[in-house]
Image (cartoon, rainbow, N blue to C red; front, side):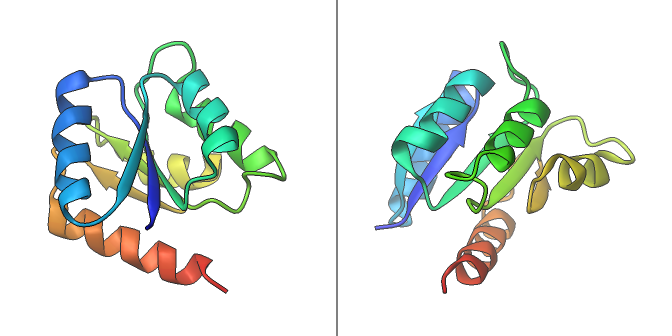
Length: 124
């Protein structure tokens, strides 16, 4: 079963998205802040990370940089998620190490397509 790490501080968003992804056959582990996300990327070894960019303690930009800087977690694909879609955010997310970028509110079919594409690229 494919394991996704969902790093999201909003409980309602976390609950809704995790249930929708579980119904699609994914195993979901969750973190509520960027620091916890970095730690869980190491301890859980997920197949892919969905990273909210606006997080407490450690924002998603820095959490992504730290995950990509660690040899143990650097190959895990990350999709940056943000509600504040500003010009340059996609580039900023890619610069921080994210493999892709999506905006909130989440359009599940579009997000699932991005997840599948990155998982296929990550598999040897």
